[in-house]
Length: 150
Image 1 (cartoon, rainbow, N blue to C red):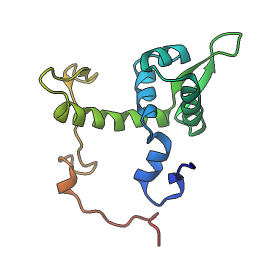
Image 2 (cartoon, rainbow, N blue to C red):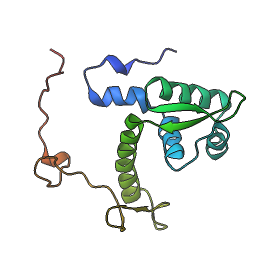
Image 3 (spheres, one colour):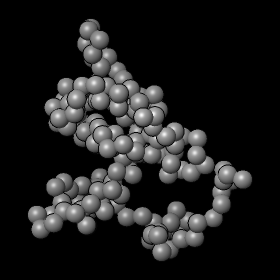
Image 4 (cartoon, one colour):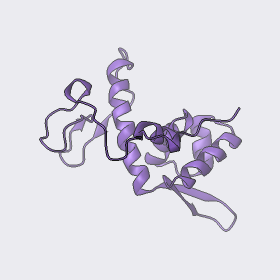
């Protein structure tokens, strides 16, 4: 069955899902972010098939989220987040905050994050880029933007 092409939809959520919306991609990005940059490391951590991992890595490279760099004379590569990929980690951090709040259970979060600027263990919070106040679903109105479908 052919997968729906979300990249052409006039919706930033759909376009982002086109890049990382299937379940393996966020986990691959997470692994690369924490330092697992080689195919074998990612495969061992996730237990993903070689075929699926190859497809996902190629897709993320093609979308400009990852860069493939040779590390051996043989055709072996490591994967590095691009600037575009690092910004997707911000999306994952919002997912972490939600998962820690609603799914961590009594054991608590499986991972903690220390903020470089203040040195404290913290979590991401959404705020308005203009006034700095919290920005959640109940705090906004959705308006058509310049790229809206007509």
